[in-house]
Image (cartoon, rainbow, N blue to C red; front, side, top):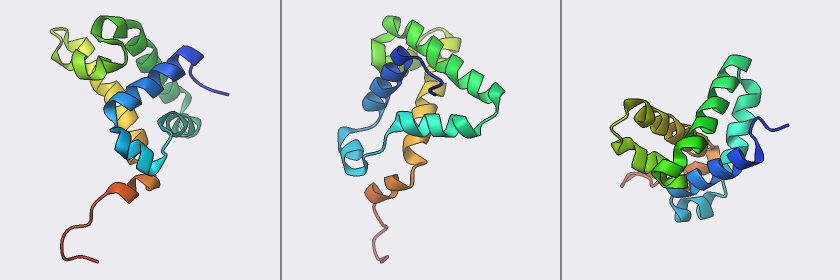
Length: 114
């Protein structure tokens, strides 16, 4: 059972496509939504409720800030609460991507190391 509505799922996937380069997604095949859902199944009910609320409110105000580009555009907002909301949504997507072990495929090793 998903914690998000169908609209929120589509929104979260679209935001992840904006934040994470296509080349990184293609190389790793990481599903950000699945990782967020998996993390929420292990989280407390209070934490789950807060994350769902962040996504829900981000989707609601996203039409003011360019839809799925909301995290990028809202960080320049004059409203501090919107800036924080955009930051939280970005962090959610980026942690779901970079927290996956498959993301190690695209990291470059430092020169001189094997």
